Amino acid sequence: MTYPESVRYLYSLGNELRSAKFGLEGISRLLRGMGDPQRDCRCIHVAGTNGKGSTCAFIESALRVAGYRTGLYTSPHLAEPTERIRINGAPVSREMFADAFDHVHGVAEQMLRDEMLVTHPTYFETVTGMAFHLFRREEVDYVVLETGLGGRLDATNVVFPVMTAITPVDFDHEQFLGKTLEAIAGEKAGILKPGVPVVLSPQREQAAATILDRAAAIGARPVLTSGWQVTDLELNARGSRFRCAGSARLEIECPLAGEHQVTNALTAIGVLHELGVPGAAIEEGIRRTRWPGRLERVEEQPEVILDGAHNPSGARALAAYVNRFYRDRQTWLVLGAMRDKSAEELVGLLVPLAQQVILTAPSLPRAVRPEILLTMTDHPNVRVAPALSDALRMLEEVPVGDMVLITGSLFLVGEARALLAPAER
Image (cartoon, rainbow, N blue to C red; front, side, top):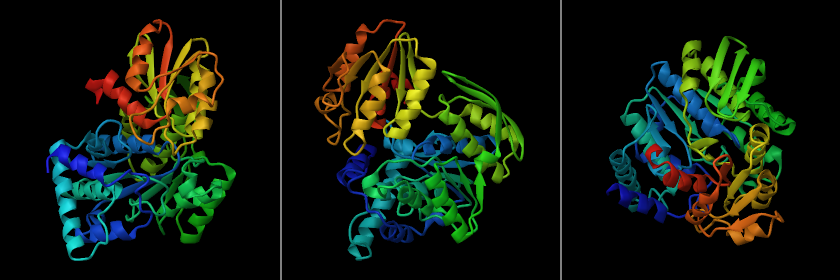
């Protein structure tokens, strides 16, 4: 198939979340039919609620600086599905993506005919198989692997990694992962493997206890990032600088904005140090990291910032950032949300940050209509835009000195990047 045909077929498999099959039997059978390419990959497996994508990006960048050939698998994408599979820092080409799809789809169709599969693999299972196929074919040295949802039953959990990491755990996807922090942490801890170290970000007490209990039960040595002491921390609107001392002494220049990125960088540092990556490569790798859609500045006058905060924890981190650096600036908020997210909490946390609010929706069927969001706030200066393009037209009146924040959904951020920063896609 061509690239557009492969993407259309993937979308025809159904909504990525609602069609998800939580369990490893289907993906395991598919990979066996493909010759188990995941067994040829040295994987670093990362789970968590927020920050796992940024953490993966830090790790991959530093491994590349250290001279390793890397594979990076993340989700969701912002603009194109090719972004999910990266070789040496670059998204795979459309041709590579289509070739990989043809390979996996062909194996799946044959297995269906042979009654070795009951149904075609889901969107996420198919792309996961494509990633492992390409990583083996391209002979990468390390694969940095982000879980899609949860961990224990996530399709990525077919690997036996060389290292695992769990970023901060919070409430999200409760309908799938459980209603308590302990239940959610238990799902995330499902990626732990016997004898494989786990680097653990600072956690809430209940989550930490659950993860550490699981680590002790299976013999996975915990590496706590609290063992690294941070000093001389300087935060600004564009990133941070700090020194950290633990098993090594490092001077870090972090290009990703927000205090929460210090936590993510420390998690990456813990992983990289355990792998034996030299300190100079860690420092340079973090300095070079790029991760679009996370407090990303796409215009300067007026300043336009995109952030993919889509759950309460992410919204709290975003609110802390705005309150720290933009308290004295007039803020315009463009907010859209998805139905599977805590839309009311997002509205409650983010709308008070702004003097002017535009409620809109990503161009997807499961987006919350802006009229519904409107019922969740009594903000005095709020308008409704049916689509992001309408919201952007409203922003033409923003004074140069004001700040615009587009947030609430990674899908909305992806649309905004396509319209505002097409050359950066």
